[in-house]
Length: 417
Image (tube, rainbow, N blue to C red; front, top):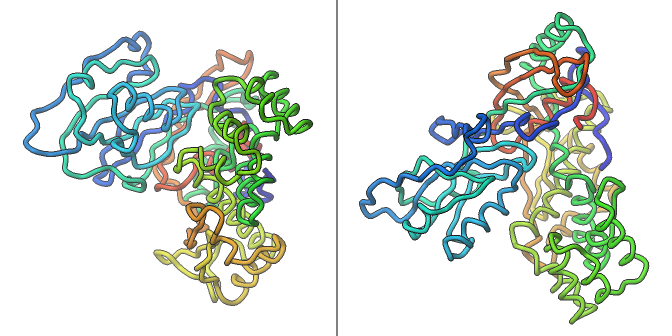
């Protein structure tokens, strides 16, 4: 992923690094009514043992709502595990939003007519279900107000006084808003290629996109998977790849197994991925283009402020998540949006993906301004992992669809790592 070029704040950064431990990054979902799904089990020492789930009497409702707390698990992994235990379809379980994997997170999920006896026996080292309530409403994507974050930044070389000063100055500047970049996790973790694969699909290059997904490697990956990817890139031998790809890379293996039978059916092979995962590639490319529009606004000097021709949402200027029905801004803002499309060699109609219609997108618009709320410095302490360094615990809240790493990037002034 090409890093974003500009900062929105002029204050000095604090440096450091994040996610040294899973418990250094805590995400708690804020429900539409303002309640917070508080994490607790995986934050307290000695509380990882099984706790029985209490389920209230059902008065005819079909959906059971629960808090799902997890540690170092992605949401889809948890949903699959719960569904497998309940012996039901994944589709019976709803959730409002994705959450970071390498973290402790807590969010609301719904289960349609669960087997209550089995549900009360559910136990996992990395997942806990609690706070059961009955409802007639399924929880769908987007049904949240936002997220609250509590994050420890480690390996900071400043003294305590200077650290507190810089954090205070940066929080003060951020009260006016910062560039609402999509965060790094949108682009695929270590390999950072989700948006590049999505670009190939939008251009109609299904084979190139699938092969990029399978074969692109990164030196930070485990040696076994890195070598398997590089070997497949050299040989295009799917039978061999089915033996070389480690079992835990089940998405890649599902694609490869299909290609073993149907070597030229790259559309069918990609269709072996879960639908909610397939969406991510198009969305990642839209996010990449959105970030490019912000960069270009900052480069040309109009920045985040409202200018003539902007399309506004809640009186804030927006940029497009490009799609085949996108309406572009007018004036200077519109020229920038057109420039990004031209530089990508892209036509809006290409977002109607004929080979795989579910990858298509009509488009939308999103505010280019992010305003964090409830920003606080909770604690400064000696860092137990890095001798002579400090650790700072900060907290803040963001509206749904926004990224904590975007805030941390401004605070740290070094790409959050």
